[in-house]
Image 1 (cartoon, one colour):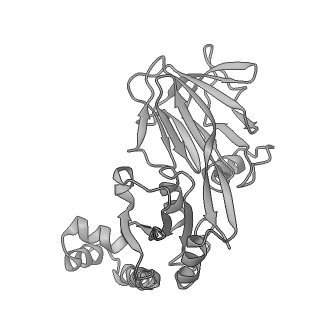
Image 2 (cartoon, helix red, strand yellow):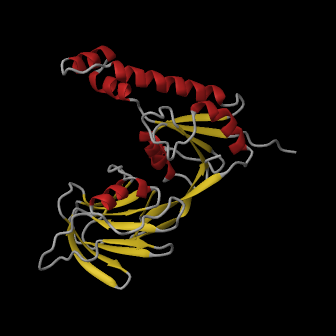
Image 3 (tube, rainbow, N blue to C red):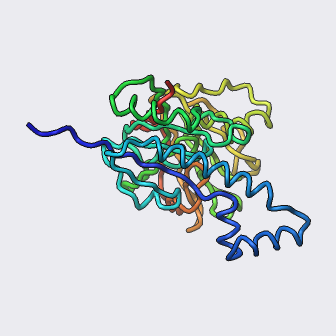
Length: 300
């Protein structure tokens, strides 16, 4: 009789502000000097770094000794191979869960918040001190999960990009983006600052900002809803481009089509990560829709 497979925990983190300062200036002393010459103190940065290190130690100590473990930096996610039975822990701000979600296929995710006074905790609702209990719950296949809709862009050449919050379609340098947008029976040519297609999770972020700024009458989708919301940013009215098709709720199963009329700087990227993008040059067609894959977030 074969023994049960030993669980593997994948801990995802990102550098602290102190880590980034030291990487830029070489040493902590140089970073402190740099800030001091600009009337700033490194004390708060030190305190946040120390708090994160304490949270990290708490989580590492909570991992059962016999478990396999990997710690992955956010920048290395696109080169890491997740296993189907992994238990994924994101220790950091809410956006870290969005960063890792696109690389998963149903693995349970535990979001741990090392700084509740800094991060909202929408996707990282748990304290580091609860890690031990949550790990055992996930390993046993138990617990209460929230399955959150993701959005995907499928190109006519077979490329695919998935995001948890939203996908951006536009110009790489944020110049005017030109494209043809089709939703339902309507098609309109646009010159705009690009468009976003957001999930209910993304409706608490960028989409919410656009929604409030334009005083939109749309009801934004809930985090677990299969609906998406579409917003065109700053559409320009002209003899060749329109402004009537600039927002919509895309119900579950619905699709939005975008045909690029941009040069080689047309792009599609997700969740604010511009370096992980699909080129969207003239003539390419993208279909935006809810993805079949959903984030499985352990909430209790």
